[in-house]
Image (cartoon, rainbow, N blue to C red; front, side, top):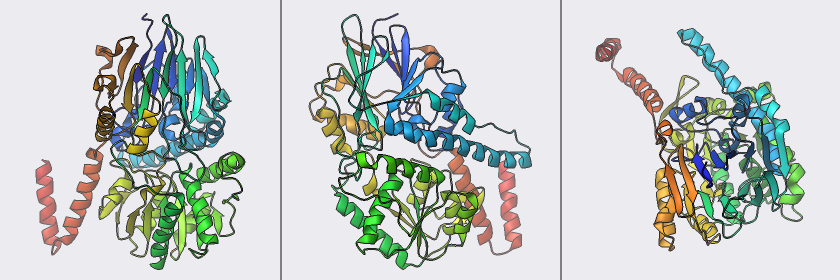
Length: 525
């Protein structure tokens, strides 16, 4: 065995989701994050593959934060033999208590719906990646620790969690591994926050790590500098315009942090008289549970003297399914906040199906929309979509407000990275689409960092961390793969079916429609 540690990038390499890094050292191994892949159906299929490593090999799992693209495959890891501890912060531990079982419930629900269609079509039934019960079983393995305290996790290995300013409990992880030549320190950024957020200060981190693994979600984009007051004013302006149309405003929002930030700003907008006190429906059991977690942590994360914003008379918490269904009758001035933030699952899809065809309705996108997701398609201006197998015309207003991003942009990322210098070994740019990673690398080179020390790893590639720099290990059994984040054949299929339907309806009579369909059948052979 080599005395040098190695990192294998089993996720968030060529894409924004699926964060998972396997660190091997002196015959031992540990994981940093074990996240779910999100995006196109081709990307999501990676969640169903066998783990590209032996799940029994790592002895400990370190989690940067609770977002599902960083934690969502943890129950699957246990289901396939992992028996170690999960070490993370107190905030993350509290959130996982609700987020992982909710993820299992959603997967079971989606699979039940899919299997009903499969039985009708005579297709093979499928199983969920894991169940709600699987998720609940792994919760007892979580060990919560404080920020900024060294914690021993393995013989010769200790970790320290630094506030990343991204969501409640989020952290950058400093990993120190003792070796023959002394300790090596690897810093995993996790997701870095932008600063000036309602519940967080600026992201922190140590200086002088040997190796830095850094996210690049917005590594190629600079957003205009916006203060918290300006962000709130922009939200108020969007909502005033949307409510003036007379229809509901649908806000697909991530259940963690984004929802609570929106409720915080809505509270102030109502109190200041910027908005009339219209009904706000929080239609997400997970977001409701998470909001209660925020209530418990609020004294630690909120500005001094700021009241809790989560208990207004016009805020209605919609937990049960029947109450959610009754929202289908809401057609006037109201705000409905529901998950998922990319419109790929959850109750927001029902609300979109019920409202996208209404000219009086508005969909306000307030978070990152991964390529090929329903949220991205709406953002790109498609005129028809398919939801739950049904065709829906898009007549609602689609608006985007990107001032609520929980990620640092290019300038903030560069500043955070440069504040960590010097980095003696090298850099790995991860958790970004290829253009974002390339642009961030270019920014580091322009800042004077040797380009030979900046690496852009491929999915499943393994790198040895040697005294002479990082060296890729060429393993024929584990060939690195590119991850396709763009639209795939599933998107093309849906678009083709919508186009065919529209073309058939546009024909002048039944005879012309039959002739068109005959030509399609002939082309299919």
